[in-house]
Amino acid sequence: MAETSTERLQAGSRLSFRQEGAELVAYIAKPHTMDGALRLASVHLSIAQQPGFYPAYVELMTQAYRSFVEAATGLKVESVRHEAPPEHERAGHG
Image (cartoon, rainbow, N blue to C red; front, side, top):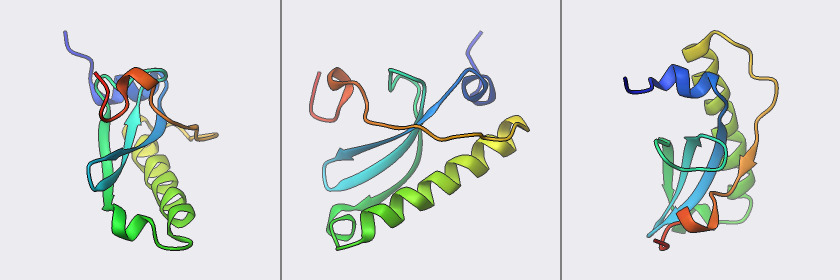
């Protein structure tokens, strides 16, 4: 049986950012893999590269991640890991 989004979140997840073409994309992903990652949001690189924007985007995505996970699981999010995807799963590889 296919794993549900809630089961995936309960098993552990992280907030991952990656560049895909002209976008900076935020994902909710399992630890150590991007398989089955949930696309949370994206922003065009021309915006993401403006001074001061990236830290604000990360904070907004962190809040969105917390809200999403807490709503889906009913569990309080204690901390949020920000990790790059594994090298072999980064945009432009494989």
